[in-house]
Amino acid sequence: MIRGLKAPSFMDLALLAAENAGKAGEVPIGCVVVRNDEVIATAANRTLTDRDPTGHAEIVALREAARKIGSERLVDCDLYVTLEPCTMCAGAISFARVRRLYYGAADPKGGAVESGVRFFTSPTCHHAPDVYSGVGESEAARLLKEFFRERR
Ligand SMILES: [Zn+2]
Image (cartoon, rainbow, N blue to C red; front, side):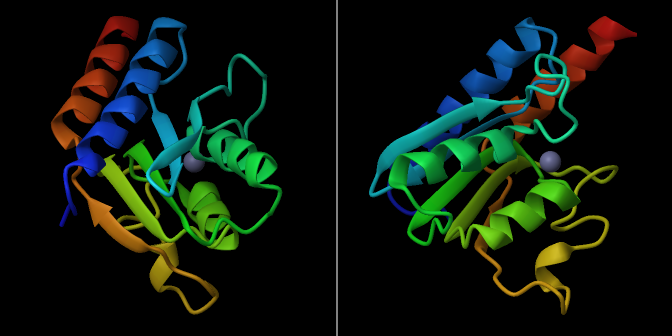
């Protein structure tokens, strides 16, 4: 499932971004975009900070990565995110032509990969990344659980 030793450490960076977002009061979800074994974008949820309903970690990271490589198509890029992407982010990942998607915890309530609309298998999806789930799952789930417990 994970090739080589690099995949877990990229997810560790996403988890670190998630943890820092949680400390800032954002829902702790983090994301990195990797190209040629190099991190080209790191982001976390910014919906509260930016008052932006589209400020999910994946969207913020995809924008930064596209700006960096000067292309709206991230064909040789892999995306690591701590939680299963939602419908909006799955759409953006498809439009960006991301090569591989690694995600941590499944999200039965808001996810759109193995949950909900399962966007990548829908007939209106024209590019699906290779998907690897459960990477860093327990840590990603722990961050979210602690975050919501503290807010109850
Ligand atoms: Zn999303």
